[in-house]
Every structure is written in structure tokens, then in C-alpha cells.
Image 1 (cartoon, rainbow, N blue to C red):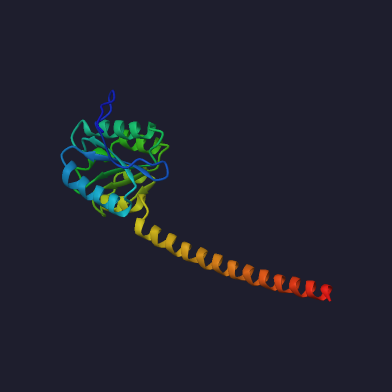
Image 2: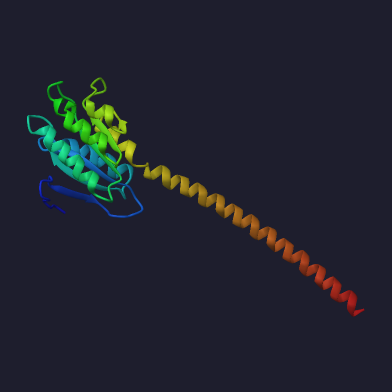
Length: 196
């Protein structure tokens, strides 16, 4: 689904909607959207297929980038069903990351009610956005790993829980069957003794 909202970037909805699963909003770079976002989307959807991912395009460098990033963050924060916002940009020179060091981006990220994960630059780079975000990770891929659970691990945990419940039910049923058998035997003995 694509739509344009007054002053807001173009949105692309990917994945399945479900109120039971995490809805992740990700701000993406216009010029890096295809390679970077395929990596993040792949990690999000492989790790947790039911995730609902909302992508918002934004400039990430240049004179208009700080205002556009701040507008995208504020827009996503205003959406009632967004669980987490990922602000990410692959590495680059310090000059390439300056939009994330701007006051407007820092203040906007700090003011959000929605948790923000910052994955800007490389491990050694630190931006103002990183400092005010709820969580800072070193790469966009690590951001994907941080915001959604591992579906296979959840399924394995559910399988173990199911096996535990089955054993408990089997044990309880067997115990109850034995109790009924003993009670039935006592009743038969009592009736026989009365009948004598």
C-alpha cells in the first residue's frame, strides 16, 4: 500500500497485519532503499514472518535531510499502532552522517513516545541520534534482530511447552484413571459385602 500524507513521506506496507505481532516502522534512505532495505526486510521477515513492516522514505544526507528525517520520525510516532521505529543508515563518512547529528533530529527522536532504535553508521560512529534513541545498535541488520523475536525459537519454545503440557495431562489422566479404578473396586467390594 502506498499513500502520501500531507508533508509525510511515501509509505510502503510490507508483511501481514496482526494485532498480536510487532509492527516495525523503518525510515529508509531514498538513494539506498533497494540494497539496504532488502537486507533489513529479509532479516525482519526471516526472523519473524508475521512482522508488519512499515517503510518510510527519507533523505539521509544533504541540507534537507535533517528536517525530512525529523518529519518522518514524528509522523511514525503519531501513528497509534507502530510498536518501534528503526532509524538506520549504512556507514559513510562523518560528513555523510551529519544529518543524524542535527539538533532537530536529536530533539525529535528524544521526544518520541514510540521506542526508537538507532542504527546509523558503523560501530565506531556515534551520532546525536544514537545518544537519544532508546537503543543503539551497530548495523541495520542488528536493529532488525533487536526488534523482533526469533520465530523459530518461539516455535521451539511452544513445542517444548506443548510436550510438557501433554506429559502433565497424560500423567493427570492416568492418575485420575487409577483413582477411579480404586474407587470403583471399593464400591464393588462394599456392595458385595452389603449383599451378603
